[in-house]
Image (cartoon, rainbow, N blue to C red; front, side, top):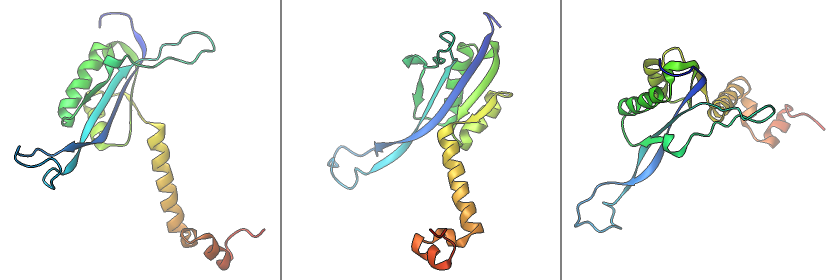
Length: 162
C-alpha cells in the first residue's frame, strides 16, 4: 500500500454487441450473402473515483478518456485488464470499493473472483428494466385480465369506472 488512502473507488464493467463482418475470402464480393453481418461483444470498463469539487457542487466522477478499457475478448482476459487498471488506480488503498455493472453473469463472476468484498451495485438503467420485467410478469400471473386490452378489461368490469 503506497500513497494516501482513497475514500471511494469504483470499477464499472459492461458489454455491448457491435456489428462485425464475418471473415471472407478475397474472391467473395462485398455484397454477397457470404459477407453476412454478425455481432461480437465488446467488453467495456473503467476505474474511477468521485472528486468532490466543493460544498454544494456535484461530484465529478468522469474518468479520463484513456481510463476507458474496451476490447473484443473473453471475460478472463478482460478481467485481467480491468483488475490491472484497478490496482494501478489504487484499489489496494481504497477504503470503500464498489463494482457497478448490469446484470450480466460474467461481470458478477469477475467481481467475486477479482474484487471480493466490494459492494456490488446494479446500475439504475438495468435495475429499472429488470424491475419492470418482473412487475409485468407478476401482474400477468396474478391478474390475467391485466394482459387484455382496455376494452376487454372494461367488459370484464375490472377497469375503474368513470
